[in-house]
Length: 231
Image 1 (cartoon, rainbow, N blue to C red):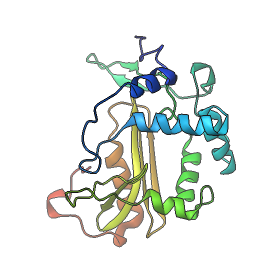
Image 2: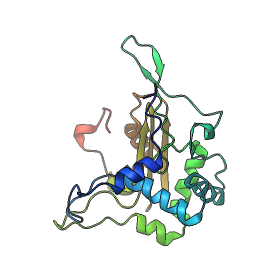
Image 3: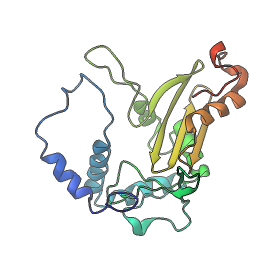
Image 4: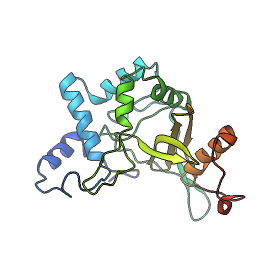
């Protein structure tokens, strides 16, 4: 273990570990659960089919969207020199650096970006410039379980609603970095929160931005939430 996360465990180790698993956690179609392993395996499939490292392949997709500053490091040597640091506040009130840097496993996390580039991601959800609108629509389909229930998750996007408005998006966290992306397809409005302090209420900040910019387009808040912070 390093000071900021595990090292020495790479994609090959994870693929080997997954290949030795002999028992499913649950029968397919009966339950939904988030799986970083599946994202890593998907990135590895893309890498093997294309003959390029997964970080390189994703970089080409981003360059197609003109996101030159968006980086997926394959290891610590690929980290941008101008990256921000993340901090949490200790019991003594002092800020301390807080990162989880296991970049050896690619596909499920550790995308370095800027607020401008994340705005381009939102724009692509609207236009489908990269991938096409059919893929964007597919990502928003919620699977039906054998129980008749539908999980909130599509394909890489959480599907929900905020004050009567349909939303798609995703949150993220590694160390004290926290992110939140919310896009309202029917109103073509999106919000991104990028934070580098562990105590940041990212979801509440994103909701407050929607409250401010959409105002009367949203359903009224329940009386119980008026005048106080809300998620």
